[in-house]
Image: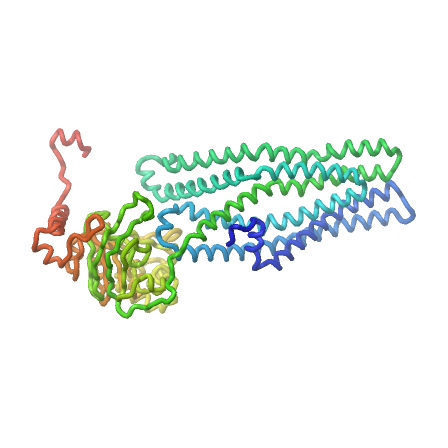
Length: 605
């Protein structure tokens, strides 16, 4: 999208794929509008027959013009329907194309984009901003053509009757339009609409957060109230709405007053013409038709009252889309290389989530160097925030490193095509995401698959049995809008997804977190199947789950402090050994009822 082009030019470029059909739809709408003018023509000729009878059958003329009016009304409905249908059909196709392009582009962006932009703002762009383009193609453009034709035809008709009446209406209309268009003149109007779009995205995100956290809201007895973030976002949006209202209302009311008062312009001019031409039936007919046609001119002009506002909103919508589309995607290699082996190595890797140009940026990883040999398990342990998950995410190139390099089979991952890199790595996250889809779709991620392959992956992940107990087995819809799964079931389904993908490298990020003993046992069995003959990076807080790892790396504050096997690290006075003992003490901890009076006063039992 060329954001330097004028808005209208860009909108026509966007609709270029259906330009011929769109023009045809606008022509149909215009013809329908012109047919809608025929009843006024019928009224004129019937009035002329009555006021200025000429030779011929007056009754027959009245009947013919009445029939013409009825036929024109039917044609107006038919032409308008097909014109509107065609415009909407093109609009929906264009919107589909834009959404797919934006979605594909977002899929190529680094994960940093999604941490910098709230879910609400991205959702706002994908829904509302793109939808604004549909308003232009399906509604605004055909309405502009139709209204322009209607106003032009009515003014020409009025001008053919009396030039002075037409001139009075034209001058008043020009003044009203100038007033309306001045609302969005300069940068002030765009500033307001841009501000509204921003806070609207924040409010959408806050509402989404409120809904996701409704359980906590209920538990704290806050049902019906709002969180601070939602309250602030709503107040900010209200403030921007008031700024828009203050700017728009005077101009809008001025435009509306002038347009709806066009009769007040025509009436004195018409009275003067009758006074200057007493007894002239033609002048009397012209004034009478002027009083009939003027309200008809008001109708299409009132339809255009929101033209400036809509175009302003579309300008902001295009800006929001541009903000996403101009973000640089992860760079693809010019000459992509495919690795022959699947050992993973970090070479003096440093990384910061902030822009390295920012003097206050902090490093999440500092000169990290290690090698995870192929078909072996490398465990990453350490305190929270030490950089374990960052290593896993960098392996999948969710971000590019700030310094150093990461290799797979000796090949820099920046030289591997993103699609192939994603095929090489499977990721099982701590927070498993279940899509609103069938069980089958969640396992295969909608890739073509043989049913037996899916069942084999589900059995290996210890989830076939509970799937078969669902109402429709593998065709049961789960996730948002479907059946809910327990945390352990969702985790096993994610492992089935990874087994089905069959990648040579597997990253397990706290896959055993927040599970009960029964689920932990089943998940451990599933993981044992998943990691066979694969390069495994396992991120864990529960140290017993990784004591059989071929290599253990202990990270602290973004650096590797210790490395070795479980036995070698336990044999010396290491931080790993101290963490092991602390975790054993925690596992042995239990809640005891306090009978001491002081303790009972301090803690409610």
